[in-house]
Length: 623
Figure 1 (cartoon, rainbow, N blue to C red):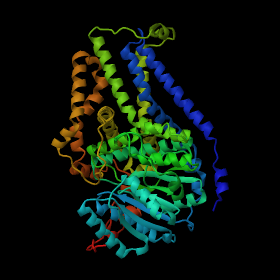
Figure 2 (tube, rainbow, N blue to C red; figure 1 turned 45 degrees about the vertical axis):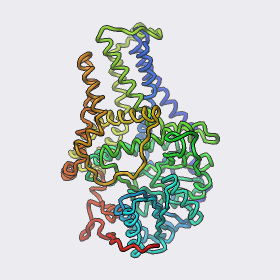
Figure 3 (cartoon, helix red, strand yellow; figure 1 turned 60 degrees about the vertical axis):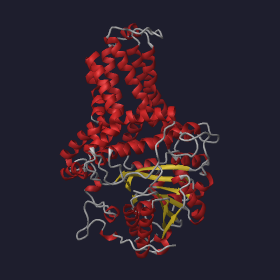
Figure 4 (cartoon, helix red, strand yellow; figure 1 turned 30 degrees about the horizontal axis):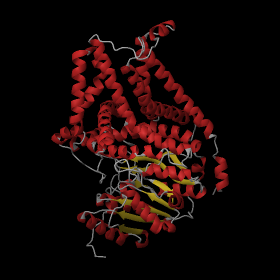
């Protein structure tokens, strides 16, 4: 086993240099794009509308630029190294071989009115795998319940009793709090306070999480070898799903995440993000740093910290520990929201929590990279309203121009003469800028798709050339329609959040099948419909020449309700499954822990998926 000192020396790249390179590339790209847009808009000086467009463009652009360069750097590492993980964290490969663990790990699953069949099926699958390991005695399971529905509580206790009867009783535990103070964060903190001293690490799971024993042990070996690491996580993939929405979404995400994460890990290094689950956490570091304070003011932006995961990572980094991401797909899974409506609901919960980070940016003692991570989390949601403002101002400008009205210049700008002296045609410049923005936006997916297309084994796991190409086309148009739907939802929510202090109710997430009737889809998506019809009508009547440019926005918003309904239908999802479209590798290969949990598509001969872990809930004895 590597000594901690040797491990640190082995992986000591110059992160200041890497971050300087990354910032330089991102800044140069942004300035070039902003300069081109300023030339295009400033032919006769910049009006109020045009100045507003440039300001909105600046905010919109940054997240795309960061994603683009993350993917480019990640692609270069993927193509230029035999082992990208070693290039990011050499210690990970040094600890890949099986070894006896000295540490103790608590595998904890906080739950709140969840599907108990799924919860205990997933845990039992992990338990079976761990039981076959020589390190089985180093792990214990804890179901940490905050459930308050009597039927759910009874089901949890029945499933736990059944599980304890067929597992090692000392290794499985169930605790239910009488009140869910501070919800998931409070649930975890309560565990750390009452049981944390018994364990070196805790593996935090979501209710839909599944991880293989070899992945869990690998993370523990790395943490054993380097006491500086406070949080360690791998890439988390979506579980196989018959939901069409989940299938298409996770098919696209699967290609984005590896190159993107490799690129971000290259420059972020020991100051990475924390995604809140499927991660190993050093208990002593967590207990030392992560007692979350109350924010000033009233909810929803004050009071209890909602999106606590990235805050915990920032606090751990500020105390001198590392937060690391291993850019490797290694049997760590979560479920994907089954419908567009459920996805938006979850997304807006995260949006609300991330907006609280405004107050945290000025906290004393936080490291610069910790603040960067908080800022990136906020930018993820500020991009949508900035883009909406840019579109609305641009359409207003076009409509006014079509009516023969030219707003007075607010700022003098020699656009025409300056561009002409350089031999620049404004129409060509506009097309070039649009092409560059689209390239940056789709670069993460393009990199991932190319990597799969030209790797035979990966290509076969995704169904072969024909199915892969068809799936890529389907996912492209799906993403094109989805983007304006999500942007409208986020923009409206942020307006209500900051102006009226309206909040999302934080409740149990929808998991598994959740068909959305058409009428319900219309009720949920009427703002998108109104926005799409309004934009399409105004442009069609006043400036039809630009209608093709706004068609994706109009179509996405107008089709929001039908798209929500169709992609939630089980029959359509089953059809895609039978046709082998939008496959993920786990549907074409055996993954033991998924088969045990009932997700495997290729079960071993003579055994049905999940057959080994059917639990018959027993009568609950009052305690």
